[in-house]
Length: 161
View 1 (cartoon, one colour):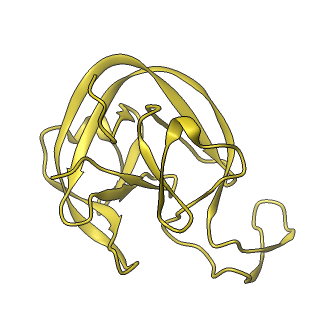
View 2 (cartoon, one colour):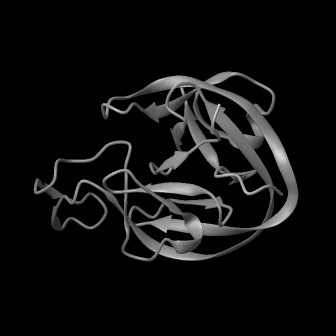
């Protein structure tokens, strides 16, 4: 397997206009995926060159404070708050990741999961990071932005065009 920045487990889902889709289900297709422009605007762009790049490799399971999780290679680049690139292997519990949507920083809201009042940090916090078994590994490119959101809401880097 190459030293690329994009490595998703076959079952990791990305957000498309048709809903969440496992990356293995869109191999060889050009399909829109949820992304973020440099201006911060969230929109859809074309995902292309979706391909399997390795068989049964070790992956990490990243669990977010929302309870959602996704599996990626240790080399997959995630965006920490502030658009800071970070490989999954060095992400730590408590790290703040760039989210698809969030309340503004400092906004107080009622958490639907437990009914407690919370203050938004305008990010997704990593609640757990552990070995996620093995999986076939997939990579992709995204037009113009070179980034995409997994369905759990975290922003990830795609391969360069």
